Amino acid sequence: MGTGKPSGRDVLAHAVRRQGRRLTLAVLLGAGHQLGEVAVPVLIGVVVDRALARSDGRLLVLWLGVLAVIYVALSWSFRLGARAGERAAEEAAHDLRVALVRRVLDARGGAETGRLPGELVNVATEDAKRVGAVNMALMSGISAFVGVAAGAVALLFVSVPLGLIVLLGTPALLWAGHLLGKPLERRSEAEQERAAHASGVAADLVAGLRVLKGLGAQRAAVERYRRTSRDSLDATLRAARAESWQTGLVLALTGVFIALIALAGGRLALSGAITLGQLVSAVGLALFLLGPLEVFAWVNAELAQGRASATRVAAVLAAEPAVPAASSGDAALPSPLHGGLRLRDVRLGSLAGVDLDLRPGELTGIAVTDPADAQALLRCLARETDPEDGGIELDGVPLTALDPALLRTAVLVAAHDAALFEGTLAENLGSWATTGPSLAQHDHILTASRADEVVRTLPHGPATPVGEGGRSLSGGQRQRVLLARALGAAPDVLVLHEPTTAVDAVTEARIAQGVREVRGGRTTVLVTNSPALLSVTDRVVLLDGGRVEAEGTHADLVRTHAAYRTAVLA
Image (cartoon, rainbow, N blue to C red; front, top):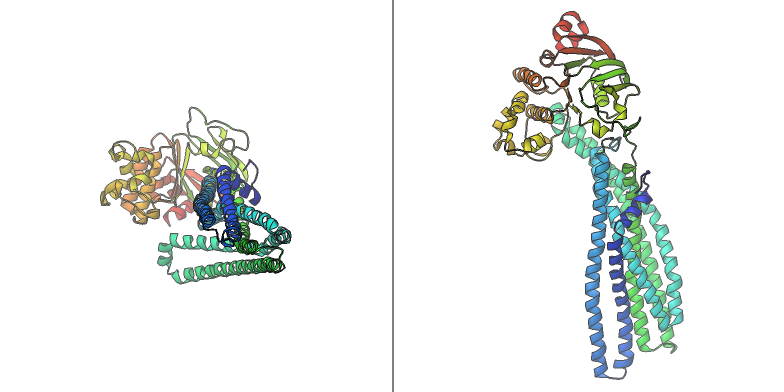
């Protein structure tokens, strides 16, 4: 789709171009099928005039044999053409889904901004499917056009007036279908927007179901979803009404068109301008034309919906990255990498000018009086966004000079609400846990995080499925698995955000000591207000009012700084 921002038209063109060879085959087979369909009424007219009218049995058998061969060809051309068209549609939808997933997972981020996860899923499924279906619609439309053209030529041979009616009337009918499809396109886009939002709200509610039950907020949540679902239903009904009006009007116009052809043919037969067999052929061709013209109505609806969905797909693909790949030129990671981070006058959100040195090999704790400070700091260190002002350096190299994907191979920010995925416990721990003979070689990581206790309690140990989002695990078990995953990744710089909020005090103290032992000699940052974790750090930094308010050991700050005592002991 090029390097610029794709538009809806670009998405449609790409979906068609990528399937060019397969689509061409489908069109050829479909066109062949339509030509066979045209040949049938023509041959029946020939049989009437040359065999039945003359009572020639041998000639009748011969022409019936020809018709049988044509019907066999019709059957196979339809099957193979439909298969090729469907394959083109499904392959195009698959390509779009891959492109959307690649964009959503891009290290620069930005695609998810302003969109719920369920909305992105809807775009990658329903919208991608509708765009892919444009291939089938084009195949059907081109084949139908060939059928109409062939039918018109056949009618010209039967009668010039009948052929001219088809040749002049078909473009007008197509244009009317296009105009009638405009309201459907607008309402289809609104329908998909509402449906995507409803999907997003539903996914959001399901993900937070336990919290909602704990707060007793189920009624409010259900009411919220009911309103969203009703909006989606209303949009769907409006789109359905638009489609029914469009289809109904096009079919009505088509019926009038066919009736006009039949009327003209009948008058010509009565006047003796055409034979009985030619009249049979003309009526058969007129009835045949109903099929292609109905296809045109369906194609118009499919194209209208495809254009609306392509616009939504393009909006995701063209989303501005949250951070540029490298705003000041590509740079390599420092070699050797010591893991020192320097923040200079960093401003973002609630951060009002943070100056901080995170020394190589040091275990540093960062406590906050405002959780927003922690979130803003984590976003900067993970390079989910760049500071509004100031800068951050890794061993003297600005983070903005590093590609986000490359940076994250060295600096891992383990978020408090990181996700577990459908699969086994070992698969969720990461590649370090699924390679090698067993988890035994990683006992120190499992012990440090206390995930070894989780492994022992599960019925199949590390091979136990944890369910979507790790729902079969308790909150404390999920936290320990997440911590083990982060420790097992062994990055040069590890930033942990509140890794022990769901575990008991004894376990938390053991985890604190385990993290210190496993991460010995490597830069580690604990963004937490937990006294147990802060007590094992080499140094603690207090952020208050968006700035560094104090530094020292945990014991010294507890003794000398009131704001620190309030933050970590209250």
